Amino acid sequence: MNRRVLTAIILLSAGSVCAAGMERWGESGDWTILIDPEKGSGCLAWRQFDDGMTVEIGAAPDQAGGFFAAYNPVWEHIEDGATGIVSFDFGDAKFAGEAVGIYKNGVPGGYAFFDNPEFVSEFGKRQSVTITGESGTEVQLDLSGSSKAIEAVQVCQKEQPEPLKE
Image (cartoon, rainbow, N blue to C red):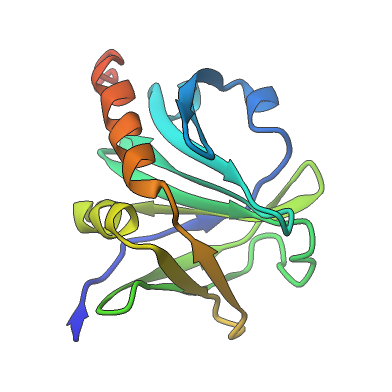
């Protein structure tokens, strides 16, 4: 089994992605490609699923990494500021990292920072991933179309200015 470690921080937020100051760049199948000025003009792929969950994956150039985020109003068990471990199981590739919970606009969700480029590769080439929180709650995520969405995020990111160095 191939085991990789995901350097992660999970933050929770929700609400309308576009209303959060993001700019629409384009579409890729079921995924919307957005630009987030709060992440150093980082590009991301956003998708809403039938169960009300929304997912984002993209670049955080101001932190020299990327992120995965998931939001769902039914995740009421998440405590603001609580920490734990979250894992991503792609079958023969696994990633895990620390999680911290928050609420945004009253809806819980998750934001995981990572600096391992293999995470994005796995996300783009797989058809599904099982995400497990520290409580043992599992979410099976359909990654259909994620490969083309990741490619669109990369094209979008190449069009963005380099982030300012502090």
